[in-house]
Image 1 (cartoon, rainbow, N blue to C red):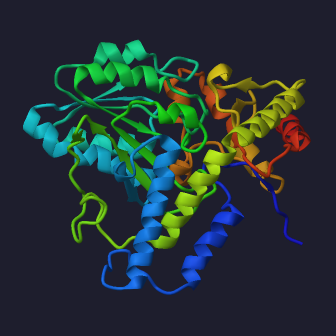
Image 2 (tube, helix red, strand yellow; image 1 turned 180 degrees about the vertical axis):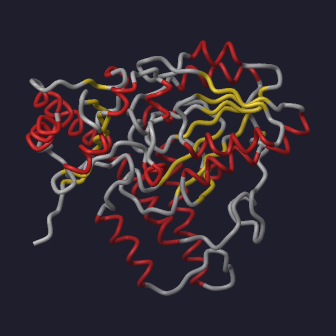
Image 3 (cartoon, one colour; image 1 turned 45 degrees about the vertical axis):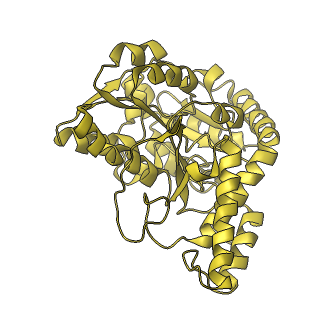
Length: 379
C-alpha cells in the first residue's frame, strides 16, 4: 500500500473543496459555452455564470463587481499591476517604486525587470519579527513614487503586514498602493473589506478553489480607475485588461470558493488556531524557535527552526509521514536560503533549520511525534 503523508503545505496550495469540484464538473460536463458568445443561449449562460462569480468575489472583499478582473492567479495579477503602470509612470515622471524586502517573487522579479528599464526600485527593510514598519514606508515615499506594493501576509512566515496603516499613508502621497493578498483572501475577511488599497491580487487555489484562476481588483479613486494598461491584446475581455476566452468552470469554482470562505472563515480560523496551539504545545521539550511575531501570525501557519537540524534533511526524512516545506513553492525547484528570513536578519543557522507547516479545514491535529522524533534523530 502506498504511503500517504499528511499534507501540511496549504500555503503552497490548498486541497480542492469537493463542493467546488462538483460545481465545476457541472460546467465541464454540460453544454459548451463561451461567455463572449452573445447570439445564443449557451453563450449567455456562460456570461451569467462569469458575472455571478465576479459578484461572489467582489462581495467577499467589499468591492464593486466591475472592479474584479479575472486572471490566471496572483502571479499574473502582480505582473499586470507592475508592468501595467509603466506607461503612466513614464508619462507622469513617476519612476520610483517602493516594495518590501520580503515580497513574493511574483513582485520582486517583475520589479527587477523594471529596474533594467530605468525605474528606481527601493525595498524597505523589515523587523526581526517579520513585518515592515509603516514609518519605514512613509520615510521612503517621494514626489515621484509611482507604486507601493506591500503583501498582506507573508507566505513563508504567515506574518501579517500593517497594510491598512500603510494604505492611509500612501493615499496621501498620490502613489498607487497594491497588496498581494494571495495568502489572506478568504481568510482575513474583515480587514480586506476595509483595506483602502488601489490594487489587490488574489488566487483561487489558496482558498480551496481551483488552480489557474485568480483576479486583480482595480479599485476606483472617486470616479477614476487606476491607469493600468494590458500586457496582452486580442479580444478585449475583462475590461480590456486581460483578453482571452473566459475559463468558465474555473471562474465558477473561484466564485463558489469565495462564497464558502465568506460563510465559513470564522469557523475555519478557530479550528486552525486550535491546531496551532496543539502543535506548539507538543513541541515543548524540543529546542525550537518560531520565526515571526506570534501576535501577528495567521493561525494556520507556523515557520519554525530546529537549531542543529538541516531543514532539507528534515523535509526529506519526514516525506513518508508529513508533507512540509522549507521555502516558498515559487522557488522550490532552485532551493536556496530564504530571502524572507534573511531580510528579517536571522542567523544563518536559524535560516538553515527552518521549515514551514501550514494547514486548513480537514486538519484537526498534527502528528507532532513524528516531527519531534525526526528532529531528535537528525540532531
